Length: 309
Image (cartoon, rainbow, N blue to C red; front, side, top):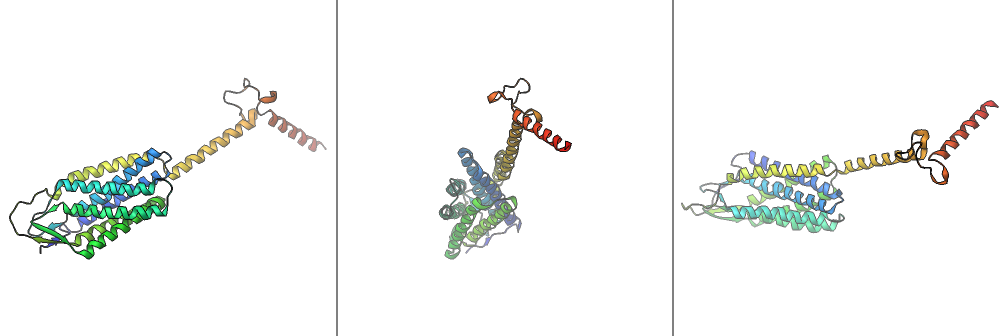
C-alpha cells in the first residue's frame, strides 16, 4: 500500500482550489442571472453557454487540477494522460451546461431543478473520477466504497443547490454568498473523492507515461484569464435587472413629460415637434393647447370678478 499526500505544498493548493471554484461559480451565477432576464432567446442561450464554461470549466475542472498540484504519491512519479484530462474538461462543461439549459430555458420550475440537479451532480462526479483515471503511477488505484458513494452524494446535492441558486439568487451580496457555498461544496466533493483513493505500488523502475501536473499550469492560467475577460465583456453588454428597471423608469418619465407638454400646448412651450406658429391646427380648427388656454383665461377672469365684489 503506497502513501498518498494530498497537501504536498501545505495549505496553498486547497486555498487556490477554493478560489478558482469560487471565481467560476460567481461568474457563472452572474451570467445566469443576466440570462434569466434576457428577452432575446439567442442572447439567453449564449449567456447560459458562458455560465457552463465558467462553472464547469473554472469552478470545477480548474479547481480539480489546482488541488491536484498538491497531490503526490510517495515512492512513485505521478503523470497525467493528456487526452483523458482534456476529456474530463469537456465532461464538466457539457454536463453543467445541460443542467443550466434544463433550468434556465422557459419558466423556472422546481421539477427542473430536481431533474437537472442529479443529472449534473452525477456527471460532475464522473468528471472528477475521469480526471483521476488520467493519473498514472507505478501501480494502480482503488477506492473505498463508502467514501466513493459519499462523493457522488455530495456532488448531487451540490449541483442541485447550485441550479436552485441560479433561479432564485438576486443581488450581489446573495450572489457572492451563493458562490462561496458552491465553492465549499465542490471542494468537499473533490477531497472526499481523494480520500477515497488507495494506491498499490508495484515498485518497478518502468517509465510512467504522461506529463507532470505542472504542465497544465500555464494552460490553466490562460484559460482562467480568457473566461474572466469573456464573461466580463458579455455581462457588461447585458444590463442587469436593476439597470433595466431604472432605464424603464426613465423612459416612463420622459414619455409622461412629453405627453404633458403636448397637452399643455403653447402656454408651456409645448405642441408638436417642429410646431410653433406654423404648426398645423388640430381637429376642429383649434391649435393644440387652445382649449387649455381658454380655460385658463376664464379662470383668471373669474378670479378678478371675485376680487372686485
